[in-house]
Image 1 (cartoon, rainbow, N blue to C red):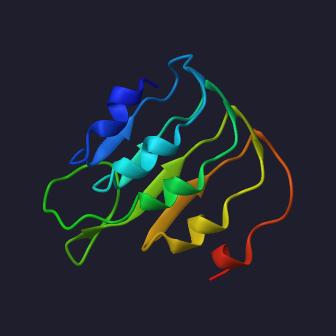
Image 2: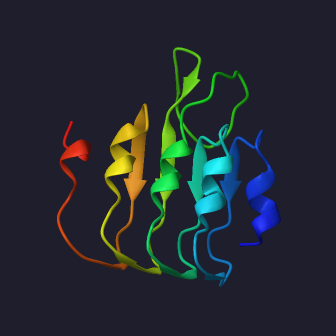
Length: 119
């Protein structure tokens, strides 16, 4: 994913699944403060999931994008499944308000589910 993509600070949805993307998810993902949906599933991404992914949060909007509308807020969705991501799940994922969907299946992750995600 080119670093320039992460500078789209007002982007609300990013769907790049099934594109044979390689490389890592940059810590610059934290620049995407308006992002409610981040779908990079079924690619060839590797490396750790950066803690900065917690910047993905709900967005007040009436636009219909991928996500669920609840009281005028989109629930955050993160789809990372089907890659080669490794390491542990960052505790920062627990900071994402209204995280409705998170899928990191079919990767090479280790460790346990962070306590912050148990709610």
